[in-house]
Length: 391
Image 1 (cartoon, one colour):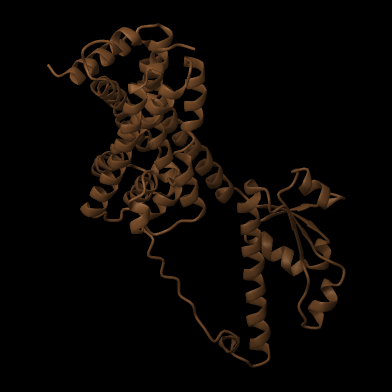
Image 2 (cartoon, rainbow, N blue to C red):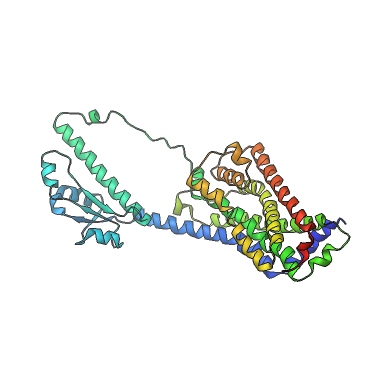
């Protein structure tokens, strides 16, 4: 049997008995993301649905100055309430989402046919109140258009005169493409699961064995250190890949449990899409293993390696955050860049877009090549006699 295969089997078996490694690879890494994501989606969508369906309660200051407007709002199902004495403080302290103030000059401007002022008091930094503010603004704009049309008709002018354009929205977005917007952070959770899944194995097979003084006897065996490193790195890749596939399966199950009527989006992850995502992101397991092996080999102790690798797992967040803030169509440079390529292609798959085989191959090859560079660096570190020296 090849020496690297012997080392591979040894590491897989030994770490299968380690609870910390198993919990990291099969529990924490792959399951925390899907569960957190599903719970977050249920909470956000449920909250928005409740706000959209519940009766709009609108505190109004100076309601007696615009009785027709207030009566029209009531006809639309709005519950007009008396406003607090200090509306700004009430909104600032989150006692009210929005307050409508009708200034004293409203009646004068209205009677003269001029633009009548209205003050809509709200806090734009509060995302929780966005739905209420949007509903209130839409109602006021609708009332304003109706009054404008009536004024023109009284003067014998067709309302179409002031509306030379009729813009018809033809939204080409599908339920699946809207799902891609909601699940923009899903690539991060998938890539993170690979890094977390192999983290403790990478530490244990280098710094851990060095502290236990079991690495030196292994290095003096008549086996090339390159094969020893290869066996250890592939074992780490196996755990990272297993974590990644469990994470995809967990997303398939968790997203399928979210009621469709709760969201209005196609949040379910089809099996074919899930398989394509596994193919796209699986090379990340090799990249995670190679980088973590290098970092762990450079560390002087188990705790130091653990500290370094905890910062390393933040690396997958960079491309996901960039694509969330600045969504871009996948370009050649992006596809050929590890982590960026996987994040972009996963985003396309989630939106229901077709991804060419050439893009998947190019992304995978570039990731494997970068992994091989880190593996070569790990071989050089394994050639150093300082590797076996603890502390």
